[in-house]
Image (cartoon, helix red, strand yellow):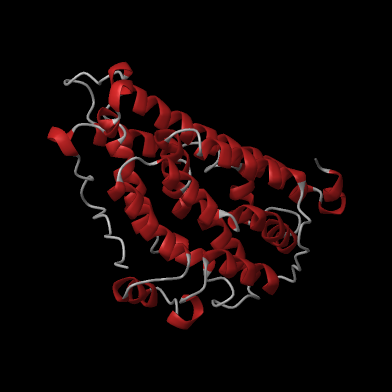
Length: 290
């Protein structure tokens, strides 16, 4: 079977019928769509504005992240270990998040574009990507053929975390299940949540963890490769989802759904950070923080 054709991240996905939005090809339901006025903000400009809005959100500028970056938590090692223990329940399911959004997309080329991202999440890279990773110190043998959740687990186990199957905190389960619900609501809302509200912020989001790990000074680059993999060369995922978001921003309805999905994802993450900060501030009593 031929490999899916990769979406060019530098160009918007080409649409059929004189560049009409995807909804225009969905039968009678299209009559109820609200088109954007020709003189209004372009789809590209609108998505760029949402991108900037997401990066200003509290989920990205959270006090928990600032404290990790600045080393002001009571016990940075404890905080990193707790993060590794709890976040795995979210990270492990990233392929499910992608597949949920893929299942809502109407256009074949849109689905194939995200399937390409899914391949990378599974540890499949082309030579150009591997060369870019090598330039920032990521060795091929550290990552090739290894799904990203496996890389995160390697980081956690290097900190001494041992997972027990089926044992998860309710806060983690709630975040994951609510996020999956948002992703499955509609194509545009799912793209807003996974693209604008998640992949769009990854590079900025993981920066504080890179600083905290460096300050700790006891983990090898191989053990922490999950972070540079997402902060240094994760542009392809972001660009693909950005392009798909633009293609869903040609109607007022699509724009509303994109922004709502983005805000829902950001609010869920901010709530998780609130919980993590409360635990990190009182490590001795963390198990009582709900």
